[in-house]
Image: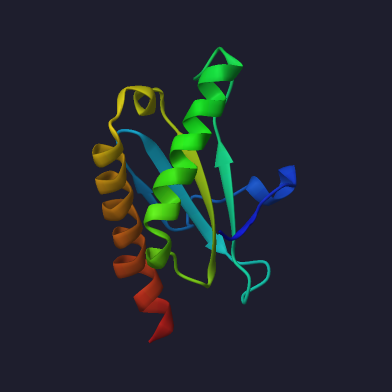
Length: 116
């Protein structure tokens, strides 16, 4: 697994940064701070998940799905995954499929364009 984003300031993105949405999460990608070592951050807010148990479960699911699709992560980006409330009712296969589609979207639409 890759390094994680830990500092609050590193979680900030702009509207022009590449992104992809799913029923379970949003992915925001931004230029990697360290291009050879892209990082990953997971967010599950108190506004969305009232209980800490729910926030932890949402982040655990995101981690597992990202690990499954790790080969689709473009090395020039840092990724921020923001959980939606629907993630708690998702099955493993639904989550993996959604993650594959979302990361594929970022790879095809943004990452390949920048490497040309």
